Every structure is written in C-alpha cells, then in structure tokens.
Length: 151
Image (cartoon, rainbow, N blue to C red; front, top):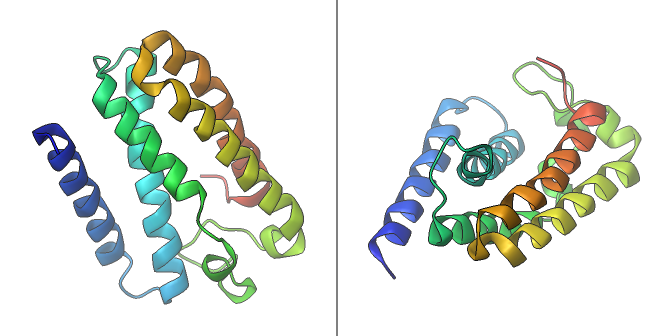
C-alpha cells in the first residue's frame, strides 16, 4: 500500500470517528447512518473536487475514492433507517423513507449503478471522472429530493 492510500484510509477513519462522536446522543441506527453518509460525502468530495477543478486530478486518489463509494453502495439500508428513527430532531431522514421504502431502495440502487460507472473510469483520466460525476450527482439528488429534509 502506498503512502497516499494509507493517508487516505487514515483520514477516512478519522472522518467516521468524528461523525460518530458528534452524534453521541443519537440512537445507534442514526449514528451509523450519519457515519455512513459522512464517508460517502468525504469520498464524493474528493472526486467531485477533481471533477470541478477545485483539486488536481490524481488517478490513485480518484480510484480509491470511487472504490470506497462502491463499497458504501453495497450497504443494506434496512438496519440504518428504521421507521422510528425517521423525521426526528437531529436527523434529516424523512418518514417518507418508510412510506416509500421501494422508491428509497430504488434510488439507492441507482446511486450504486452510478458509482460503479465512476469506479470503472476513475483511474483513467479526469475526463471520465467528469462525465461519470453527472450521473452520480443526479442519483444523490434523486434521493435527497424525496427523502431528506431540506436545509
């Protein structure tokens, strides 16, 4: 494992730890899902920054981030989103998740497909990352529009 990969994994662990510590009073399901979304957001930030030109493209970092996004897309969501933890203070997950579980699951699968396409091109150049990020962003927005409390 090269140094940048080790540093990346260490940073990822730190982000997850901070997310869990910050939500220490929340039920474990909320802590787990918020931690998972922090990991997703961190990795999206890495490749998104490259795609927008805010960060220099680095093939190894882009590939690791895309690999992590695919790994996260394989999570089974049922334990993270029980109905009694939706729509409560301190969370942005709406009761609509429980009301339309099939739609929520479909959105998650769409996200999985989009990040798998990103994974296939992440290490091959900036142009492929930029092209793939459009579908990734759409998949995130599709879920957030219907199932997450607006800021």
